[in-house]
Length: 55
Image (cartoon, rainbow, N blue to C red):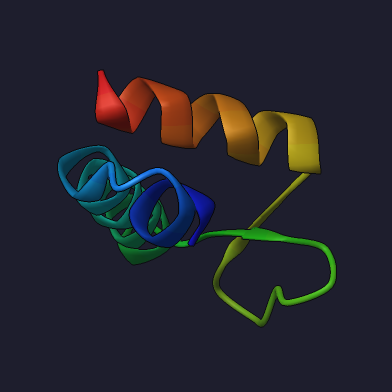
């Protein structure tokens, strides 16, 4: 939200949104939202996965 609304970086914000969605679609979740059949990751690992998805 900061990128989009405070800094006006809409393309960058959209890239992050797409990366988050891609990682979630692969079944990765942090421990607070994991369900059966999904892969629990730490917040550091989730951040790394999202950063790679932006790639």
